[in-house]
Image 1 (cartoon, rainbow, N blue to C red):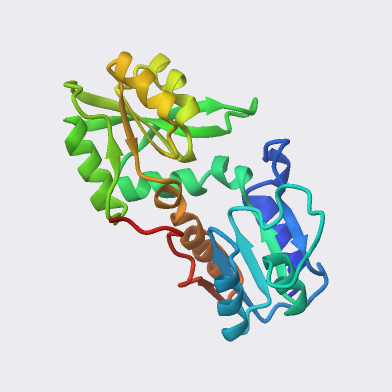
Image 2 (image 1 turned 120 degrees about the vertical axis):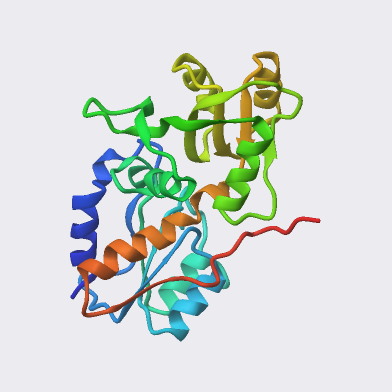
Length: 256
């Protein structure tokens, strides 16, 4: 089995052509004709993940976030791209295409939360693909109860939420990663709350003025499921090689 075989499969379940124009997806480092010894999946392609792949004899890493995003002006010793090339490891990225695809990151997040999508939050493609989801809940939440539900369902140390807003939440928008910019779409679709990550200060202020509830479960918290979803899909397809989600792919910060 070769790297290009995995890339072809990914293209069937999450077409690279559906990624946003600013994105950088596909085979970013390595040889499409290289024979695969093992596959490691992760959210972020860090040096720790690369070291783990080496230790576990995996020469293909598939990440959600691109290891190359902005143009590189140099490749220095100790950087992830250098370490990939040095160790003969190929790198594939599935980013915004996997955010939007059926069964992708956002769907994995919904499953963890126990919510079902009734419509796409922000449609991007004419075929209905887009970012996030709108969910009608089986029962209502208070803002604090919704935040606690997210914390427990996603196994997080903490989440941020809009305090001081007294509203009954029966319809909620969910967007993995950084989805604060979709707040207006959530309001237009009749939602009382938005669950996402990386919410900017001005969005919190706009939400307070609109009596709209935000729950910030973090970029890592809402997308760490990407690695496990990728590993599950690939392990069912490619039985002949070891596929694993990196244990070293952890939250890059701590909380006090």
